[in-house]
Amino acid sequence: MRTSPAPGRPFSASEGPTGRTRRHRRRVPYLLVLGGVVPVLLLAGVRPRVATAAPSPGARPGAQLAALLDRPRVAPEPKSETTPDGEFTVERGSFRSEAQERVPFLLMKPAGSRGRLATVIVLHGTGGNKERMADTLRDLAGRGLLAVAIDGRYFGERVPGGAQGSEQYQAAILRAWREPDRAKQGHPFFYDTVYDVWRLLDCLETRPDVDAKRIGCIGFSKGGIETWLAAAADSRIRVAVPCIAVQSFRWSLEHDEWQGRARTIQKVHDEVAREIGEPGVNQTVCRRLWNKILPGILDEFDGPSLIPTIAPRPLLIVSGEKDPNCPLGGAELAFQAARRAYAQAGAADRLVINVAAGVAHQVTEAQRRMAYDWLVRWLK
Image (cartoon, rainbow, N blue to C red; front, side, top):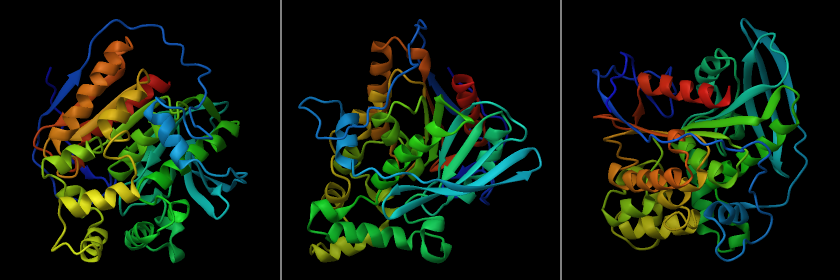
């Protein structure tokens, strides 16, 4: 089935929907929808699958990821200030995810709202921050949802002086690469922000304005990868919308299409190539680096392995046909695995895959509206 987007400007992952990019001519995405009988799914009362110890042999990949990233829990100690902003109530604050880590957040909800609201976590891309997601928060709050964005590790207020860009991020990844002690290494490339998302869920569950049984997550690019990683390991995320993020890291290496992903942290790859004596960034460099800083991403935590474990919860995948960061050949492996999982769960209507034809690493206006409609449909 084909569908055509309404006219609108696409936005890049780091900019969000209000970023300034050149106008693209109208393009036609193709939509893959799995039909089937709608079963009665008892999602209420499902507890998070976050493990606190090494998983047993044969454990699901999500549980394995949770065990890998688990660390000593600390009291969240949330702090915030609330201000009115026209039709919305805006809250700025932070909570503690680790002893030395406070996570800044920006929250919006409809002004005058009462009771517990369906809630959406919003995750930004590389080079972005929670403020760059403000328009997305307003769009979601305008649909009656509570929406909250956080600064990922080494972005926004988590950088001294609030510096922008990804210099601190890349410096942290290099430190992780060079750290010989696995226990001290950390995982600044995606994984540590995923851990922060799990701790954000802890905070949201305690709020009187959040319905803990109706929490979704949408992320763009880096934030989209963090969305499917977080959702696979924590079933408290009831609806997931990874945008321009679904891929197979392993496929990209095996088919010489690793370049786009490497460019997102180019300085890191350049330095690793120098340190291991390679003439430049190549498959060897990527494999060595990714295996160290993202253990399992080429195997059990790769998209085709991990994304199917989100089933039967509603999942909308938004991609671009020409996306160099998420090559379509590898993404198709994840699509196929997801289709099988949702079909086997009798939840085919809970999976939609939308690939914008001719579009690179951007989300079209039509895809953005589709994402919002999906979140409203399944959370409200």
